Amino acid sequence: MPTAKRIGGIEPLPRYINPDTSIPEYEKILEQLQDYQSSLIGSSYYYIRAENDRMSLCRIMPGAGKLFFHEIVDHDKHGISEDDLEEAINHNTGSLSTPGYYLISPHIEMKLRVILDSP
Image 1 (cartoon, rainbow, N blue to C red):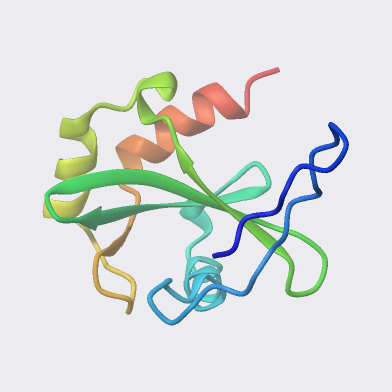
Image 2: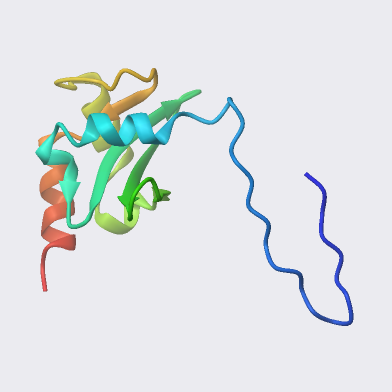
């Protein structure tokens, strides 16, 4: 990706591009997550991504129309351990159709609700 040059001490505005085909289809993942009420916590849908022995808690925040934001969540900050993520993957009641993507467990859902739904 070409880099923008700094002109007269002013940083250029960021440029956004469409992801290439190596990026998972987050719109497709969001559609699947909407079928599981347990994955909707607050205004975000949560799921787990497992890749090359790494697990990440992720969320998608839908916006207007086809606009949405994808974020990798700091699971430690929410009291969710690596063991919690691993257990959710190993004892999952269902995985998403995209390989390596899983639903959160009831245990993770409970922890997220306690933290995110509390005033």
